[in-house]
Image 1 (tube, rainbow, N blue to C red):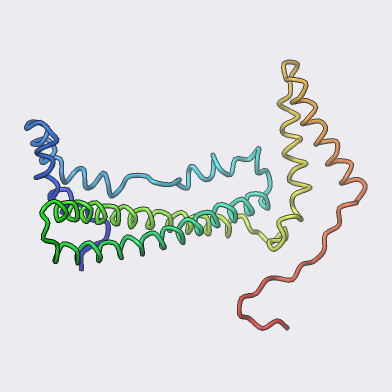
Image 2 (cartoon, rainbow, N blue to C red):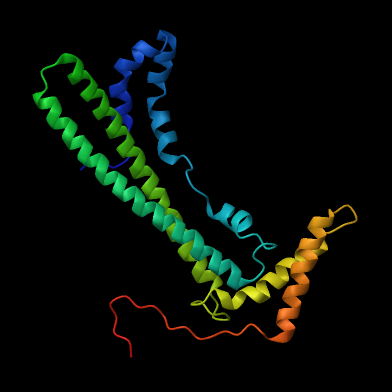
Amino acid sequence: MNEKRDIKSLIQQEETHLNNLLEPNDLKTFRDLVDELRDTWTKKQIFRTETEARFSVLQDNRYPTKASKYWQCVREQNVYLENLMSLSFEYRRIENKIKWLQKKIETETDDYKLENYKIDLDEKIYSKANMELTAKDRMREINMWSKLKKEFNDGTFNDKDVNEHQLETYHQVYLNKAKTLTSGSSQPEVFNVIGQLETIERVKKSGELKYEKKEEITFGKPTS
């Protein structure tokens, strides 16, 4: 069984056509680099690493609590799930298109149309390999967010209702923002930060924000 995402044969197959595109010296260099280029294509970074997720996405000033980090992980993971599902539909279409092109090539008698079908087929096969590589890295990031969710979910907050943590989290966020204000801060910036901070503190003091226990959504499971 051929390994998915292996484009070495595709690159070598395209060498003949690159002869028309590249100068002879460039073509020779390309041929010498085929193994290296395959390695580069296979290990290139597509989506964020765990390092980037921790310091860039889940930065402490924006997500100062474990609850806020957890819920951001939920959002990020869901985005990648949605993207993976969309990619799956696209992948099915391209597989179907490849089958269609292969059949057209078998029966086409017009040389011009035949050559176009062959070009389209090569392009679709390359696109399919790219999709497989993308899907693999999307799945890696989905798994990474799962790991981070488990790490931050220490049982100290409600992991069924995103609303419950937000008042305390936003209080800390705006306290952090207020610390960055200086005499050089613009009037709209000060108005926005102080206004939201004072409102949060008023809401916390008044107790006007009530939390109701919500039933967990189940899929095909009987509820007691």
